[in-house]
Amino acid sequence: MPPSDATLLSTLPARALLGRLVLVRLALIAGWTAGIIWLHWGLGIVLPLAPMASVLALMLLFSLSTAWRLTRPAPATQLEFLAHLLADLTAFAVLVFFSGGATNPFVSLMLVPVVIAAVSLRPRWVWLLAAVAGGFYALLLFVYQPLAIADPIAAYGMHLGGMWFNFLVSAALIAFFVTRMHAALRSRDRALAGLREKQLRDERILALGTQAALAAHELATPLAAIQTTAHELAAEFANDPEIGDACRLLERQARVCKRILTELADRAGETRPATLPLDVWLNRLLERWQILRPSARIESVLPADSRPFAAPDGLEPAVLNILNNAADAAATPVEFQACADEQALLLDIADRGAGFTPNQRAQAGRVLMPSPGGRGWGVGLALTHATLERAGGRIEVTERAGGGTRVRIVVPWGTPV
Image (cartoon, rainbow, N blue to C red):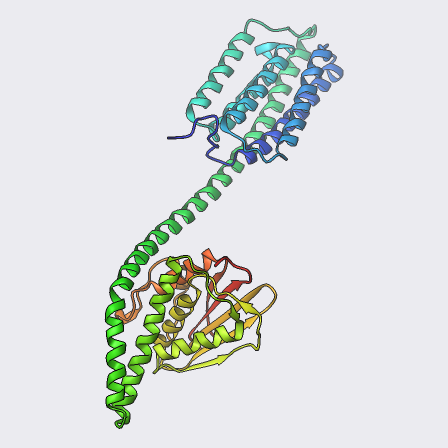
């Protein structure tokens, strides 16, 4: 069921709209005050100071109460913003009533709330405000308190000066508010584009996760058969080093694959991962990768850090993905360096491959980029990016001096698991 108009937020941040409206209202109060001083004491035109000062004082109090309201956590709504614009419009109409009605050159200031509504509210509220402004203007053609101006030259000067000042104030206020609204719209559009991109990526990853779960279910039985067969072949060819070593390698890899499936099932069952010393976890991670990629070479620098570490969900597969990408990129050894401070664990994985173009580096992890030659499906970086984003971390892809790519994985301490 769609939310009601009373609770639906504005298409732009309503709190920001109210803050800008307060600034516009204060500027108009200052403008009206300056105009009253100029007319009453500058040109000697007697004005009803008491009621006009009362209206300005009420507008000032309303501005202060709005500023206080903005410090409260309650969300603002379109109807609330509309009520503020109607209050401002009514106050302007009352001030114009006491200062010549429709003959007052400042009467066009009543268009300012309509312009503000046009760039921030739904069309029906804009038309409502425009109708109210038109009704006030029509009423002020016939019902108003005329100004007592005996000198026609003074009246003409007042009208010209008022039109000039009114034009400056209107242009400045409209330019201020509309440019701010356009900037807010552009910012909102960028945020929406980012959310749409993230949603599309998450949908792809969800589809991959569903297929992975199905594959894990189907692979359990053949992996057990492969492990058993490899063990039997290793025992049978124990005297043949070449065949025996190959069978033992196959058995170890089948064992690793089975452990991966077991961990996947544990995750699905919401089993929390074990907490290990950081150096132990790093060593096990690299040993596991070396079993999966026995032909790959790696040069590692690991910290002697025994602080307890519970790897966030999906971190190990994410790191293995990056290691596989680095091993595929070049025949030279993969460089792996880990360090930790009080805020985060940093993992640097570097290779001497062809690297990424600037555009590819900017999109790395956000879109699927199949590797050259069809060696990969391009989902590794996307999965890694999504995993780290969920865990509160990030991935940074930079170009190395001398060629190649460096991928930095940043995992804050205390991330959710």
